[in-house]
Amino acid sequence: MVNRARSRVLTLAALIALTAACTGSSVQGRPGASGLRDPYFPKAGNGGYQVEHYELDLDYDPEDGRLDATAVVTARAEQGLSSFNLDLSGLEVEGVRVQGAGARFNRTGNELTVRPAEDLAKGEVFRAEVDYAGTPKPVVDPDGSHEGWITTGDGAVAVGEPVGSMGWFPGNHHPSDKALYDITLTVPKGYEAVSNGELRSRTDTGDGRTEFTWHSPEPMASYLVTAAVGKFRVTTGRTPSGVSVYEAVAPEESAAAAPVLARLPEVVEWGGRRFGPYPFSTAGSIVLPQDSLEYALETQTKPVYPGAPDEETLVHELAHQWFGNSVTPRSWQDMWLNEGFATYAEWLWSEDHGGLSAQRRSEAFLAGDASVDAQARPGWDAFPPAAPPGPDHVSDPPVYYRGAMVLQKVRQEVGDEAFFALLRGWAAEHRHGNAATADFTAYAERATGRDLGRIWDVWLHGAGRPPRT
Image (tube, rainbow, N blue to C red; front, side):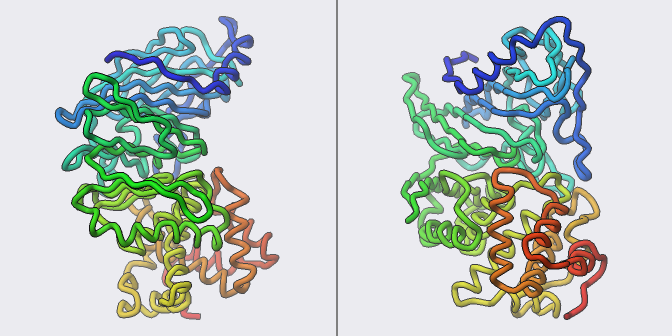
């Protein structure tokens, strides 16, 4: 692979320069942990450092499926480090440099262990560059779903929830380590290449290829990073409040997707009223050929849809921009803070637009009345939303629907004025950060001045079906 000259982020370069003076051969480091002991994915992520910025330079050819890439990971050491790990599944590592010097490395499963030429000091901002290549393979979840780098009819798409991002770039792949991203995608001429955030440039490289440079100015968890390559039709615009919109749609899905995507600015503005200001500088969509994926995903600023979405799905994935993307779970046990909130947003949208109220939907689930809501079927109460029984259940119905019912119970208890102030305050309090279930329950009681312990005990943490009260 021929490495191209890259523009570097000046603030990160300055940080590196400021910390360079404290390094030296006298530093005594120890290995960083090879996992963060997440309750459901204990090997996800790595200890000893926090990433501040990723710069990914990806050269992809849809014809043969080969990816040639360089990842530049800028991070801050949280301890003295003699070695550190990056998560990477498959793909061949061709070389690693740390602070500009060649580093030793080895692979064990999905762990890439890097040993810098000199130990890194606690507090040092360091830069690790990894050259890698190969044909990316999907990552299979405990529940059997596929993620990572997925080939489509005319290209590919990268989706990461929960740990699939390690299938296409090395990193600290746990939601608790959010970072900034700059992503360059080089593809054959005639293809579009789409990623998160803002399109900074689109350049003809002169050799029959086109280079797309994307910049994400807000922190992002790695499972929300995407890259999509295809023969998309691209449209751009703005919401009434000035958020830029970028939509990439597979041509065969354009007619079906158009009426729903036309409501995207309206949904963003509605979310701003209900949940507080939209948390990102851009919004949009990536619509793939139908059946390219098994699911839609809330990839940051540009949710990915397998075919034209319906209105509820659009609302759900856009609501995640507040709940899941801006306010990101601290661990995968906190998944209901994503899915319960986004499901409740669907219910609110219906209520605000002449459909079923959130209370009526909640009653339908308690009664098992699928004639009111098709999802009100057995299984929504199989376990408490804050305690899925294993990693293969973090996306099961109780996380979504019983999670939404928790919020409706709080609304019933505290009243609409306090409840909607709570939603806006929660999104503001943890904007671009991480939060756990305990953070939410404490915040809800503090913000409303109410003891909500019975709701948490029965609805959030309690086993069995809650009573119909």
